[in-house]
Length: 193
Image 1 (cartoon, one colour):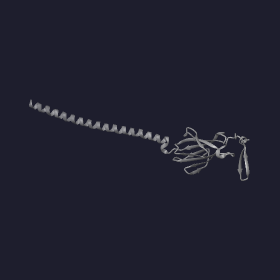
Image 2 (cartoon, one colour):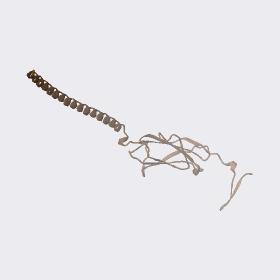
Image 3 (cartoon, one colour):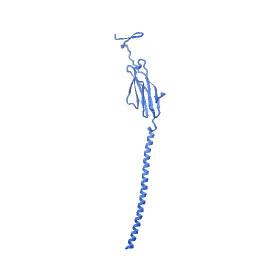
Image 4 (cartoon, one colour):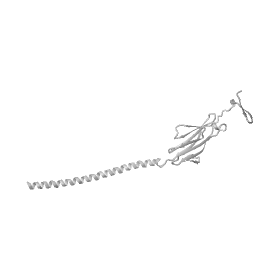
């Protein structure tokens, strides 16, 4: 009749595969803990991470009383991952060296019969930037470049003015010398002639 018989310590057990019930219940998903650089963090609506955070571990689970070992997961860090990451039965997500910005971690699960809970659980993460990654730093760098260009321009024009002044004085001296020489030559020619 299709039933399976198994010997056990307490006697014989029978299982009718046709009588196994389909589980239509979507497994409720929950984020259990977040570990940042080896230290546990409390779960809040938005987890703000300090500049220079290296490693993040997010532990999650889904409640299933029938076959918890067959519950499968997918997760995604929106803003970083372009697609869902199939984690299988693993219940921890690992991330390292996340760039500064705002992210949303999402995890979904399916029960042993393939019914997905697409709502899942979410956690907002904000990775604060280091000073050299901020807009203020880039603005200061741009202002420094403009200031250096302006100072370079002013120094160059001052040097050109000084060179112009020196050359003008030299031309004036040579012109005076030439005029004096011409007057002396004219006086010598008048005495001779």
